Length: 445
Ligand code: 5AD
Ligand code: SF4
Image 1 (cartoon, rainbow, N blue to C red):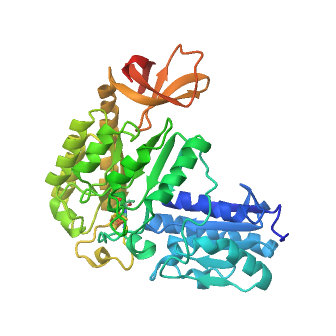
Image 2: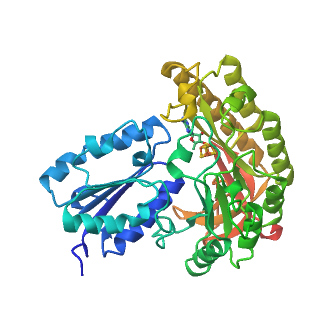
Image 3: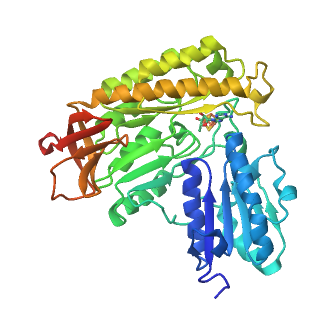
């Protein structure tokens, strides 16, 4: 029996799905000490901040929130405060956390999150601050069976790290080299999630999933991994993120088209519509190539849902470059766009580039792009009419709703008695007030 049994912990998570999933593993680690989760920091004995540093905004938000814990710690010095993840892992971060936040007891990075439960126990015993940032994973990263937030979609890591070194991006510096998990291990995890835990979606995670397997001896490509996972019996679908246009080959499009269990949705960050900017970003593709992937994907899967990431205001981006990005959005008509204003990340090459753009101008461009995308998305609704989408049937406020692979809701009026959580084809019959309605079309499957 340790003195954590029955005590509460609280986790705040910033950043991407990778971090969300890592917090699910931290949760498992703390629960293995007998702890319980609470939403209330005041109740918590252990308070964890799992941080992100991909943009300055995320860092500032986390930092400002952590500062507010100072008074909580003063009131109750028995509380244990820990910071982990990408922010502490930076070599030249904006904040010197250990110095500026003396009331934080444990500061670790991305490679030793798996040791957190041990650090918490050590701190409780010795009251000695733990500040440990290591360059390589300390032991196995899949350290605990994650305690997941969501009961429909489960995240599963397939590859850690990134070797791409896009010139704006801090990720390769804080997440290390690409390291794939063995296929069999992933297979067993997915099988358990689907067959024993009833998950309907499995989302495979990696900074660049298309690099999967390149570092393994008994190698298997990403598309082969997908086919392998599709042999698992059950009514489920597989999603994945994120793909890199440089590595996405025809083999993947073929598997997506042919495997019923691979969801027809693709997140393919383009970052910019200008070849000049893409080259300075070290993205290794041009717009012609990018568009050819989109064309092939749409030809193979006409109803595929497409999304992307865009950075506006990258150093040297002029009006013409920016207009090329707008032109690309009009051409592709994405279902969703995640757009960001360029944020200088210390230690990355782009920080030193000429032609840095003022914050005000970056924001103007960002808003212009978001306004355009909003119009495109409203217009996109037309394309759903009379199309059939394989949907997960769910109940929302007592009404049947089909959720497409891309996450769009199709209301199915008059469908009173129905099973939930199974996949069925839904044909869209109405598009009104930005809402879709349809009928289940079982014959089409
Ligand atoms: N500034 C702005 N956006 C960035 N991203 C990565 N680094 C930066 C940066 N320095 C965006 C990219 C990436 C997404 C996860 O975050 O668009 O695809
Ligand atoms: Fe960052 Fe580029 Fe790697 Fe994505 S591919 S994580 S943007 S370095």
